[in-house]
Image 1: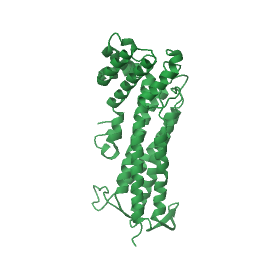
Image 2: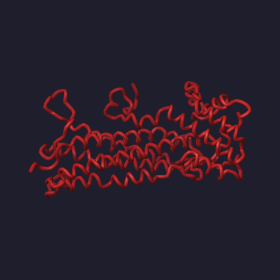
Image 3: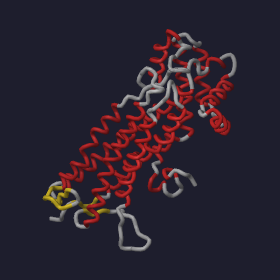
Image 4: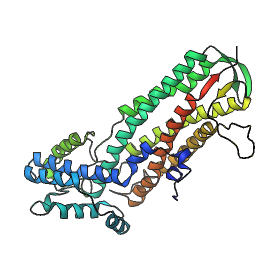
Length: 349
């Protein structure tokens, strides 16, 4: 039993998305954090801060190192972050004479935020592909039923006749913009050291940061540890995506209620009324849109980072952002399922 509905033993059948959830596993986070440490060593070797042999050895250890997760859990309860103990364990695995070459000039936030950016970049491409697939399904529906008639409704009342193409256009129109924003979104390296000044690297700091960003496939951006706009902007995009898919779900639910304007396959059953086919996917899209809209306000609260780093605002991000990503992932999965289950839309000719 879990507290989150996204990985609950049975609610996850409705609300889960295993492909996206894998990016938020402890294993994925640890891999990304160790990837940061290996890339940092390589970047620092290029600029003479550590030897190339040290970088090679650190990289080899990072590639196979498996930390003691129970110790990480205990240390996180004490330190508020996982990195201090992770680096301690990694240094012990690296050993002498390269012990002090591990994590040189970095701080916990660099590791955690960069791990997040690496994983969000992969998720953005996953979501972009799903949006492309959904747009193609809408195009297919338009080719089949676009000229059929629908009753246009304004303020929940019958207005004038429209075509299925008109309704499909409203569903499809936002998708290309969201897809472009996902693929064009910058995912920046976070590398600022203890207080955002990279003081230990001195004049070499910009060059090392640039090399590190290139190693990790992230954009080279001056440290942003207390400026959280990049994270909140991504959360806003998630809410926009799920909101538009919620509009699609709401429209389908209302079409199904009318009864003669849409025909769906794969509806949900009722324990009391065997004749019913409930538009479960459509309803869930509405719920997920409202969930993300609610969570977005919390992400805006997390913008308030006092001074050079905030433990409170940072922790708030950890609580909210993964849930928003999962809600969006499930929205995309269900929208594809729902659109694929439309057997007919519009009045029969």
